[in-house]
Image (cartoon, rainbow, N blue to C red):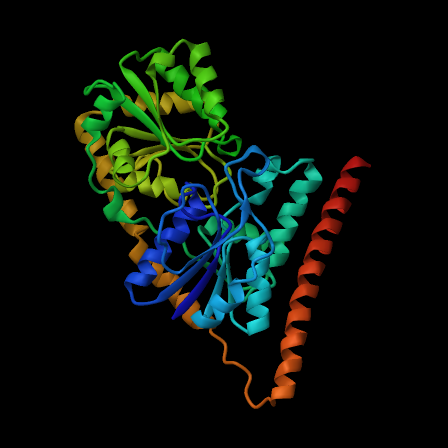
Length: 426
């Protein structure tokens, strides 16, 4: 099968969508399928990429770490012609997601869309952030979903949410699988020495993009509260982003800045080493669709302390592979960390064992099976018996139809957002 993927984020960008595309691409290729990825340019891109088309983009859009793909990409057509895709898979409802829709409609190919993100939690990256813009983001994703042949969601929680919002297209739950071998082994002791963390310290860890939508101000305060009473404990943060200064300021106010260690952005073996340097993984985001980083942490044998939220509750089972908190307060979070720190070695081993079992259930081999089965079930047969003149007219009509439906989707999303905003002001 030839799979054409459109994504607004890809390596070397560190984020859930980029890691998802990378993981599925590696696994599908391993099984003999061809995958062509269309993605924006990013600084420090890997050299000599195979079957990757890079689109010119504006870097660091609105002071974020995202690239904004430009709509003009004329070389794409010839490359896609040569690739001869069987299916188009879009990772976003906008930017290159719009290109995916146009191309799939014009070529009469099945279109799959993975609803990775609760976009209403990301409107602060767009000038004019407001409740109307949040509503627009939800409406756009819903309307885009209803233009596709198949929707993937990373969790049951998001499947149920999309159905409540009006998505009527078939939805398959296909989590992003974890590459178990990437996290199975790591030199945590060496990483601790590098970060000047004592070998016998109790280390709380966090991995991810350091951004406001990840609820990091809350997480920093909860961990700092815990560390005030545990001078032998430390907090290891892996990642970069606009919330770095917020974390540092929170620890400074609490007087525990010496117990904070920031490793920056890590990949491959250094990332595995960092995870193996941790004793427990802390996670407070409420904006996830899956919380893929949780399965990565568990693949390194880490139990998790997290707030109950969509995408998280499918991974963390309270008391089995970590703590899932129903009360989203700093006091409850700090108490859960304290509970972890006071476990007997045998109890901690049981949590770690269950965490590893959870990661195995979310392995990329299992989730790729689900994705490929869904692909195979929606492959349509092309229309037969048309003359060349009919075919030429159908090509033009398909292109016009795709453009019209995109415009209708935008207009409908705008109208719904404005109506909701006006109603709230009455």
